[in-house]
Length: 158
Image (tube, rainbow, N blue to C red; front, top):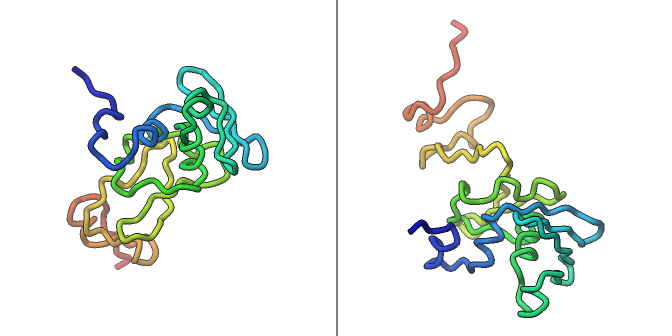
């Protein structure tokens, strides 16, 4: 039996509505102020008021829970950080694509870093664990990236 992304994450601290908000194909479009239109992969469209935490979907209306559409809007706009341990390859590539905010990923040290989950799929997942390229100036690569063949040393002018 094949399992869905949501089922594979059942044992984690991430709630199932969070998993669906991050992994299902949804488009979040700003309508003005803190109101958004969220269209799901099935074609259903719901209005989300991010400020008030309200949605027009049945899950929110009848169960009075924070539905996946509200959660999607909060993740997409950066109002809520994506846990650092979430696999970026599982996150819908359109997350945050149509809104002004930028998705945020919680850092393992307790801080928050910004990370783009664009459609290009380039998440630097192939970086060595000990990569420190960001600390170096210019285009000079760090030794771990050279060692692992991820980057090459620049040509010498001599």
